[in-house]
Image (cartoon, rainbow, N blue to C red):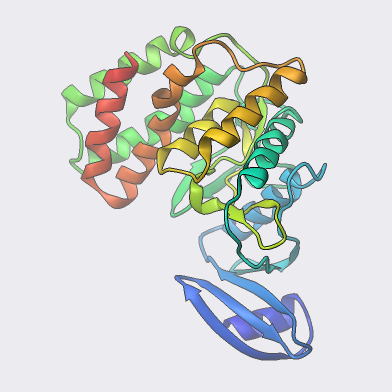
Length: 286
């Protein structure tokens, strides 16, 4: 099935044209002039995971997310949001809204969105969402160790390197800072998934949503560089404090700890440079 056929079946109505914008993403023009996004992903339950994540993140309308028009095992059809430019006003609004979204909470650390699969995806990497009793045990078991094993199996890290990550996992209860309740996370909040729109608001796209630690989303914003990050984080911190849930002291010092998962995941998928970066960050965390 191609993108036009997917849109006709999952969204309905005739199609007048399609244009691939990169990878498996297509902009599909409807005969009436509207445009939708058709994304192909035949990884098991990936489309179901994305749809469930978008519904969960958009439940209270803290931040806009694309409407899901339909999905199957291969395609997901979404609302098209024309891109725009980052502005200080939009960044501050985004920061405040992200704080509100996180505080909507989740049933447990590692909880999947309602109706979402436990075996989900973060980009090209499988990601297991399995509820755990606390964040350190969940993070060690389902975010660090699986990708560490993959890196070792590929020869990207050796047994001496794994000892560093093992120490991090053992010391996570102390390294993680004060305990806090599970947050409602986007889960893959790098700059490419922060969609600045023509209408002004920042939209969330391509989630790897789950219940987790809110510092994880903030660390992802910093990992690959997000425009106007200081505006985002400043507004976030103010909103969290106003809501009676300020970020725990010293949270900037824990950014590297929360970046270990995406770094190891990128190493497992893309190769060794990320593995060495992850190792350096793990040593720094200790």
